[in-house]
Image (cartoon, rainbow, N blue to C red; front, side, top):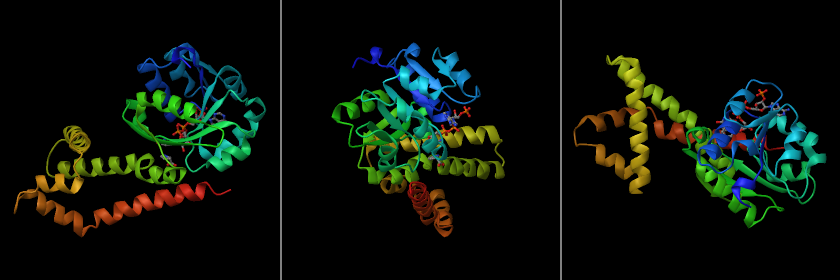
Length: 271
Ligand SMILES: NC(=O)C1=CN([C@@H]2O[C@H](COP(=O)(O)OP(=O)(O)OC[C@H]3O[C@@H](n4cnc5c(N)ncnc54)[C@H](OP(=O)(O)O)[C@@H]3O)[C@@H](O)[C@H]2O)C=CC1
Ligand SMILES: O=C(O)[C@@H]1CCC=N1
């Protein structure tokens, strides 16, 4: 299907829905007039309207209007939403859930048999077209639906199809991982403030440091341990700092964080 013909709906219009919609619009993948978003309040719908998209308070209207429907409510709200929209779900619909933890098995159980359903895990930098997304398809979704989703979401960042068992791990690594990185950025900047640098300058430099380090990792393809070694002068500043981080068990703590978030996503998926 040509992107210009595709009608895209969002049930739930918050941060992630807004981020995905923005990526689609900026890349010219879907015209604004072909996007319809629903939410109970106007809190987030205004931003959609300002971009030229249509909005409604009625979730069923999104199903009636759209072929590709993103379910972008919080996970605890999703079962009620699925119950509400189920009568309006038809074979032509492609349903994509963004909800953390909610399994394909649950989605398939709560939707009509044979529904083309996919489970996507994005992360917040989709908002600036630098997201990291993975998705898996349910039994009713084929290569064509996967290719369509991948092509559309490439406008929001990296997007790969993976076995469903990786989705909760991606949540711990990247969906939640963005927050660990902000914590690290905050700590970097506060260290600089402690040493006398003004806060706003320290924050900008912390962000650019993360951006540059990430860009080098992606562009060189080198293992981070190799790149870290390249920064360390024998007897120099970096190795003294890294010793402190090792004493604080930074690596083990971050690994524990990924494990905790992954386990939490698994628990959230239990019926
Ligand atoms: N935030 C993140 O970094 C990530 C989030 N996710 C997943 O994305 C999903 C959305 O998260 P996020 O965008 O942060 O959440 P937000 O709280 O920003 O947005 C949730 C949206 O759902 C709407 N909503 C609430 N109840 C209903 C309902 N009954 N019917 C229709 N819409 C409803 C809200 O309405 P209103 O506007 O009126 O409040 C709001 O627009 C979640 O399932 C989360 O697990 C995945 C990866 C990363
Ligand atoms: O905290 C959460 O549950 C969601 C999923 C990943 C990021 N935010």
